[in-house]
Length: 196
Length: 385
Image (cartoon, rainbow over all chains, first blue to last red; front, top):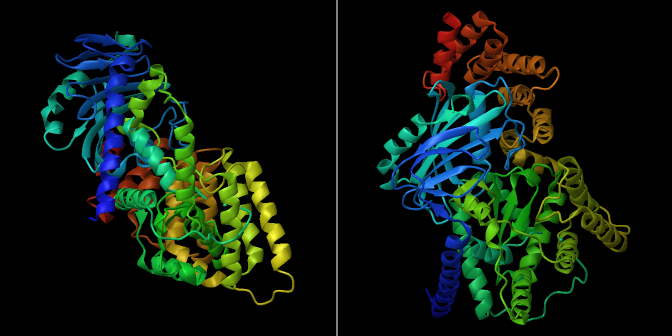
């Protein structure tokens, strides 16, 4: 590395540090994390889950995002959506009456077309039952732009005109195994509208 | 925010793609400090891209593309820029260049072209961004503007939930935006000079833009990078035609190289059709597969993908069409497991359990380690009930 490169590297590093500082200032102000242990009912009243002890919830009326050590290390995300809603990265749609395998394919394609998801690899794609609902289970890995490998378990199922998903994603090394069982507990606690 | 900052730098470093005065930059090309930083940043970005899983690796195609680049390269740039072409597995029509001469072309745009002359027009445009140091000029312009600002505006905090979600990987990645209209016009006209000097048929150049325009209409959205907006594209087509009027009078024997171009992109055509299919871009996938079958009429994989297209799209008569395509694929290669599985799925959903069972069992016998064998075994159990 020559002198110029070292200097430019230092300048870039300085810029990034400033940005990180701004991020730290902004996140507490605008993305409040709430310690809400216990049962959580989605604002749409379509589902509820039990939030484990020591996990924090991001305040949002669109999804449930919880984390213990921070979402860049591990998180659980529970979402529901009308099947007619368009996806962000593909033009595909979920349809009523789709087999779980077909729904899984739509989701795999959606994730694989996301350019922020690098080196995406599906490790497992199997039928799965989420409580009493027939769905699918995906296990996949991907890298972020810094080369960090994340592992994700993703459950999904269709219920009438809505699609429900619950995923656990964490840095593969160390963090993924740490909270896998906790995620399974969250999943077991998932209840849909008619059960609530 | 950290990514936002990186994106900003990325946007300045990598440039989308199109101009006015084709005069060559007279400025001394000795690398200056800010240019060094841009190049350094480019190398880092390229490492990310090269390890992203999005790079399409076909050595023969790579050699061909780099040969075309060499034909276009003006002698004065040989000493300063080493051009390298990388194809990305992305079905959208786009191309972008880093200031250090590394040019990324999406599979989508490459497979839409008709011949080498159109390819040369695309590459020459991107090369002009490098030779005319557009990234550096845009970066300096950005710095000037920034310095004029007394205060840095910080976004309203309320929107940051979305930002957080995007950082977790569920939204778009780095957006490589195009240059200013002036720089794009300069790249267009300079590129056309490169194409002219290399002996390519300039009459093919406007057709490149016509492909882009068609895509723009078909996708009902303006895509970033090479395109620009629809009115800008119209202007670019006009610029191109004006250039042709001046430089193409009485010009004979210009090179198109249609056959060799089509030969080199055959494998990519099929790959891109699969990418289109994954992205749910069914019309593009259909067009690509039909084009592929035009030169490879006995390729079972193409028929299988046509069948998948119809099965996934599931519009009127699509299921009947899908069955027909799967049947063709099986006829061409009875040992190919995928169409057996796909047609089995159709029978299964139609309640034709005997036919479904036969197809699934055949698929598993051909491919016992099929990645979705757990689903197939489940269907077989259901067929027994």
